[in-house]
Image 1 (cartoon, helix red, strand yellow):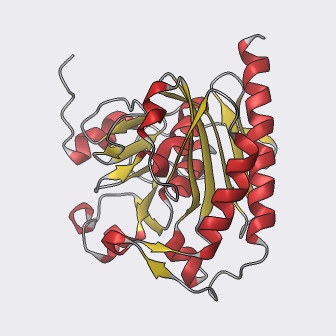
Image 2 (cartoon, helix red, strand yellow):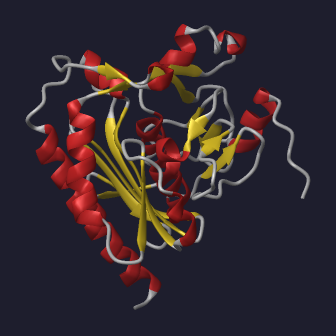
Length: 266
């Protein structure tokens, strides 16, 4: 099977899993659902678990690994070449509050690289789907990252939580629009589709938060790096990443300068 056919088959599997997730979510009402809290005060709901179960049963085949926010980590995943990295509901805080900025996030990792991803926001009926060889589609239409080269006039998507904590005040009147939004996966999907120019996080993220978004941004012609200017290798023993920056290729250098990112030595 050639690369394009291989990835088209993967995308069909991802889309089927997103459909199953949407059906599983139909029994829950955002903004009117009981919530519990895990360690670190992270919220979790019955919807997270229902989606996790629905997509696991569809996706995983012999020889493939599984890594999800809602499944106890099995380090046997380190021994496989192909790994599904999933966040059943990214943006659970927004889901609980009824804010339509949450999504289902699915990525396939091959040999440490996110080669395909799918992100769906059922609340807004948006689907972002793509791979390295096929490019990215937004609701079925081909899309690309922004071609903007200057931060002036750009739209940057920021973590609502980070903004509430005052962590974005340092950017002040920087000449670009800062739009607070939940779900880092959803923000990255919007960057991939050219609906926003860039997004970055100022705090650590986990692989399941960003894997699908990274696959989409890179497949759409963009750049994804940690805040240490390092490419992301997925399926690491520790899934914690030192923040994430995603943008079109021409905007990456101005953002690095703004953030004071120093290129890591080769």
